[in-house]
Image (cartoon, rainbow, N blue to C red; front, top):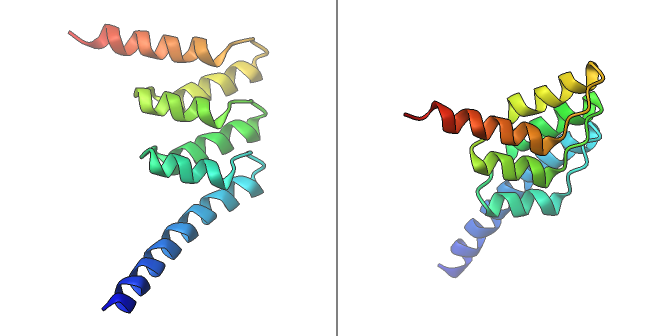
Length: 116
């Protein structure tokens, strides 16, 4: 009985590790600096790790520097992070100086003003 529980535990941990490793490898190959420990931490906080990795890769490939913590924080606040990342990318392409905090504040204001 104990051996069966241990075997099941090992299988579940292995599957979770493989999923996280896959995300880490994808980020690593795209040169989007996300550590495996960060992914584990985000998983424990129930953050949308697949989306965060995708947004981080988008930003990194466009040459926009946004930290993983900034992306996670914005996602947990309910910000439309993909739109915010695209705003940052567009601003960089057009030579505009814009801060991540300004983009997030604008998104938050828009969401608050939409509510009746």
